[in-house]
Amino acid sequence: MASMTSNPLKLPPLGRKNMAQLIARARDVGVPPEDYARQLVEDGLALQREAESMTISEIMAPVRKAAGKVDDGQILRLVEKARADHHRIAARGKRR
Image (tube, rainbow, N blue to C red; front, side, top):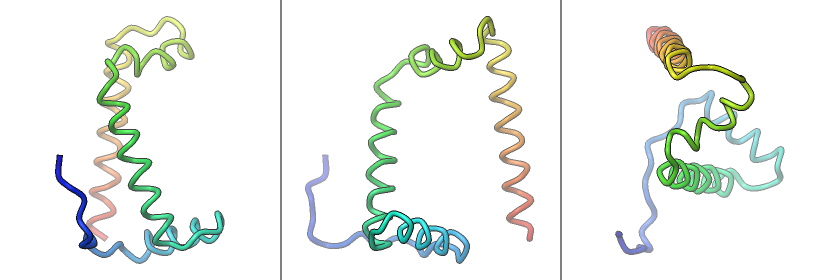
């Protein structure tokens, strides 16, 4: 694992809409935007670590419980449709 460094990480700038949303959310929770952004990154990394430590069955257990008798094929089709919809919407946004 890489050691901690005192040099700040330089990130590419956010788009105007994302920056405005970040600032607004930080204001809503009463913290500086830099602290809010750091918390988002830390929360995202923690969620990633948790997801990596779980099996797909563990991750999907709440979904299966809520959905009742849904087989893996149905879940796969739903995920593929959601992924396709997401990519279509994202591509539409990039063309603007």
